[in-house]
Image 1 (tube, helix red, strand yellow):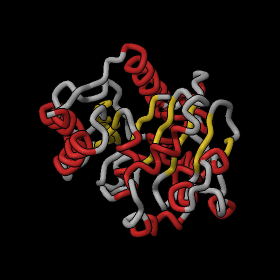
Image 2 (tube, helix red, strand yellow):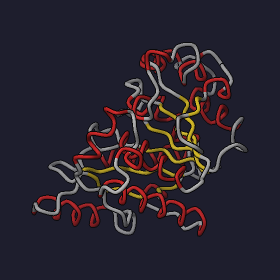
Image 3 (cartoon, helix red, strand yellow):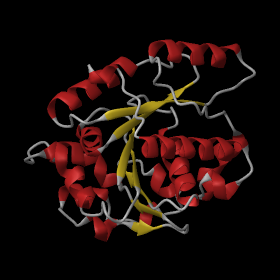
Image 4 (tube, helix red, strand yellow):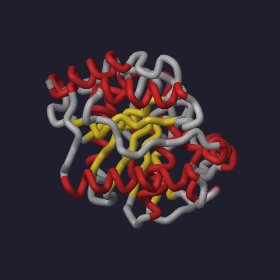
Length: 265
């Protein structure tokens, strides 16, 4: 099982949209995929049609804090090949509760080891912070996918994330690689979007995904219906782009052509 953490401590960059939709596109291709919602807001959970109010005893919180077997927390979605370990608002307190736990950064890694044979991919939606929950995701992950929105201050906080990845590689996960920077909310009609693309490519040479995710109304609407874009509007630009991203991730996996970055230094 390949584990990808979708991470960027900057909020509103498309982490959840990416986690939901690239997972759905992998599943659509017959790839057995597990989504792990590690954001207390639980938007990935609801974005895949799971009622957050119905998630209580068995969520990622219980896996990390109460040692519940992750197999008992995983929920099958409405779609073939796509399961989720849901989030719960209790997860917001896990940062504090994990402080005194031995091997606190490795709780998610240990949990996922128990289902590694069941899935081809696991995609972790990280919270918009660089706390213990995100460290758990980075400790468990093989690669990090970094969404970066094509707006002002696109690279704000990126150096901090890269520094965190470096530290993770030094201390808790030496094999962690950078899958790529994913440009999101791209609007070809604006000079700003074009400028941000060039700026990101200069800042992260050879580490930018070929696929660029456009600003797309249908992508914005899909979560309110609890559906990934390939279900809500399978022919939209958003759906086509996330399918292309899924292909890109599969090619990286098959070719073992992971994008090595400055975090490797």
